[in-house]
Length: 151
Ligand code: DQA
Image 1 (cartoon, rainbow, N blue to C red):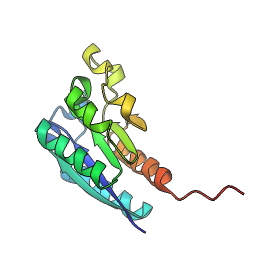
Image 2: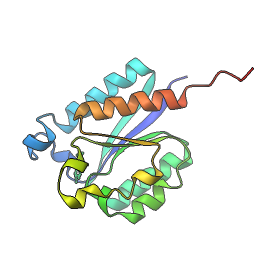
Image 3: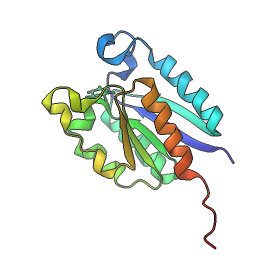
């Protein structure tokens, strides 16, 4: 059965393509969404990509994912570094959560070295541009795979 996955993107990621291309690359959000959907087709995942600049809307989507037991690939963007409200919402998750970043926050400014999200995520992929999302979807596919019963 095809697993639904939400790929959620936080503030300013709707500006990809024109936003600091030397940091985030030249692909647009639509390019990113198409790459995610294509990867999803290969992995038998039905991928829905959303973006918002609004913390309340993002938290609403996280609640929806928890209620519907949907895996999430999340780029929290700047919320990564300070949104305890988002972190508390994510702590209610009922399915795998992969934190992703296009850039490698650990190699950038000091304020980006803290993630308040990482501790409640299944894992993090950062620094590989669009490939970060594709690797995260691969992780989701592995994590939701039915396990062989122990003999
Ligand atoms: C980002 C890294 C964050 O520090 C930044 O605020 C973003 C994008 C990334 O994908 O590299 O908006 O999450």
